[in-house]
Length: 609
Image 1: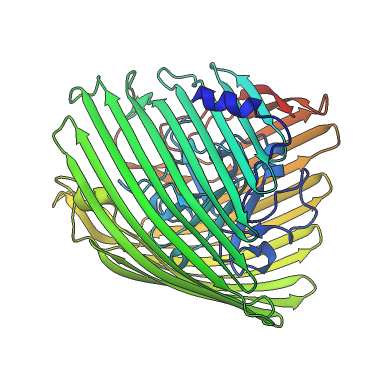
Image 2: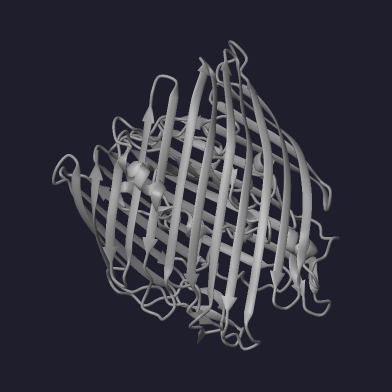
């Protein structure tokens, strides 16, 4: 792994890492919110201002200004999203988007799903942002585009970087040290990109060390004008000590993760039509160990593999303005093996899915209409149909009205279906329906939006302790309001949002766990050359949780947190920087019983060639 990082650091020259879809972000915050091109919310890339959907885009300029190094750093300030990390960095992290479960949100890396086939979740804590062009968060159901798990929405990391080599070295308290690099090279027909990171360190508790290594590489060859083929590869390794179990110290409990992704993309562009396709393989391996478990030495080893193929053809009718029609097909095979000391083995559990989908978009004067549908057929749980429709009306004066409806589903995971003792091969997919209505003002450097939404879910998969197996029995409803304001001009940008959420278990009548009723965030960046300054503030209200000792419901108090950052361009190629996380040294726990870090000072230096 270190050899990969060293190779990336010495490539040099006029190198660039860039997303394949839209152009890269500018070096300062964009002066207008209308310029951002989004690739996640539709089958055809479109400007954010033309989407009848709620989307948040964090561009590279903001990522760098905030000194964000991991995906969780930027997700913590997204409207309608609750990020829950069970302690310091590297510990289990969950994402609740508009009240949906963490397993009900799809995580993509350059179009490749990163959700583990075993139980459907994603390792949100193990996604570094070195070489990232932007992060896109599409809120609301998107199963009509992506199939399973897009119940609450979709989070996508799109790779790309500025020309040249960017190297960051930083360190801080508790032995924390990190190196990150992004580099690439481009000729007339060939583009090569590399990025990677190496992290070491822990926190104030015994056995809370977190070591991680990640590297990605991509190559794209223009065979002839309009025809491109390529390869995408990512490798991530992480080992995390687990300091607490049931609220008690666990000095030797640990888990190690290994992820591998490989994809072969193909792109064809011709007048009036285009084709985007890829074949992808993803493997997930984990090793859990606890020699001091009360039940005796505990060990579990899991291996999972996902093979996927996806193709989308888009037709743009000449003379039809910006209208288009996209047709797509997808095939997927998932397989899981598991071994544990308790004798519960899962040998080669497998399921296959085939899907057809379509989406159309058409502008009729000031009105834009989007409609899409998808049919999934699975050899285990059967079929599922998902619809999505949206409308955007340009009222005038920069005012837009948005309305949307979507259906979604989460397929039962291989663990829920087949795990010895608790698996249930008769499980049905979790089903959801959602509607939203919003108004947006977009005028030059200023943006304001207000969106109301409601989602209803049924057939939620839960564990029945009487039958000791997974069953379909849950129902849930989430409804709320998201308010956003933003201003960006030149080297300054300010965004703020507030969310009010009512997420209820319709079976018990109780609020859903770990979803705050109220939350808000403020992000401000300013670049008075040669300085770059940042301020982040977030407020998370009280929310229900589970006491890790008694396993009874309890309230987790609300908290506020402020992060500060500063960077100084000493030379055109050299910039020292520092940041203070949790500057007010607040004591809080995102997950009850697992305290977050107090005030933490980190310093570093950035080299750009």
